[in-house]
Image (cartoon, rainbow, N blue to C red):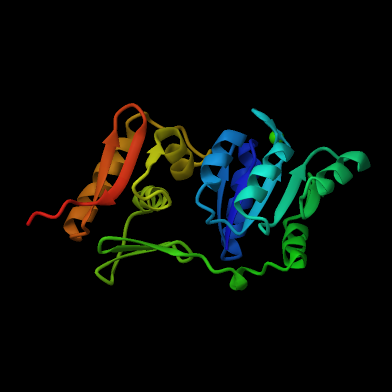
Length: 227
Ligand code: CA
């Protein structure tokens, strides 16, 4: 079960991520419609929690975009808007449920269960690139079938790159995935995690390479074989 939280309030987003982790569910957050669209491209999520008041627009405007990618993906609006008209509007737009802030996490979990998408029923894919496999449901990595244990940040970087194999991952998106809202990020911090990750991959003999797309971001692909 992988939850995408679209929420621009840092405390709310990180509290939800922690609460989901306690339930054994992976969750990640993005803070804008633009970031959400980028994160949704790969259809790796099994639930969307969607705030309505986002810095670049109404979360409800994301529903048609989500429905185009996956007609069955459960969407729960989380919002401070509480009028009956707005609730009805949200449900009419295609959300599965509507929860007003503040709410108890237990209530959210109950509603997730009610939607009928129990974590165990959702099958989340693995990605294989050359001899490296990333298992998104357990968040683990194997090289030639042997588990590769990575420090947390390196794991998050690799995970983000693995969701977009052979495609460019924008730097800002990567930073948001890897650091969330929790910390002040040094501008060179991501680069140092990337270089450590490169080293880890090299040591484990993974035949993948992280390319820098100057001014844009990074890209993960198979290494060229030296024959
Ligand atoms: Ca908001």
